Length: 125
Image (tube, rainbow, N blue to C red; front, side, top):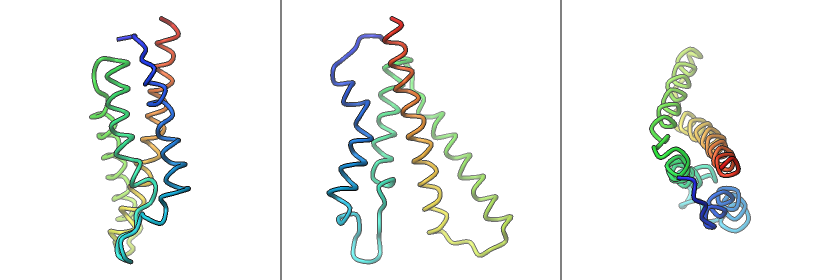
């Protein structure tokens, strides 16, 4: 459980490295014609989910991914209630953009909390 692999360092810096590389080199390729436009959050979020799974299993020997997905679903429900209370026309595209951005920010926060927890466990021994 507490054995350190040198490839974990790559796991710790991979999301930041991926965000930088996508912004710098692959930004023009994130659209298909004029219909589908992806953001960096759309591309990085699946990698964050895999990283959350790996880090939680390395650190705690069970997965925290279902807990994270439950939190994201609750945020989606709250966002739906917000749109309903506003009484404005419901735009699916606007809802999904906001939902993906919030899920990305929560994922990045949760990911690096797991990274700090893993480093704490490794340093504590």
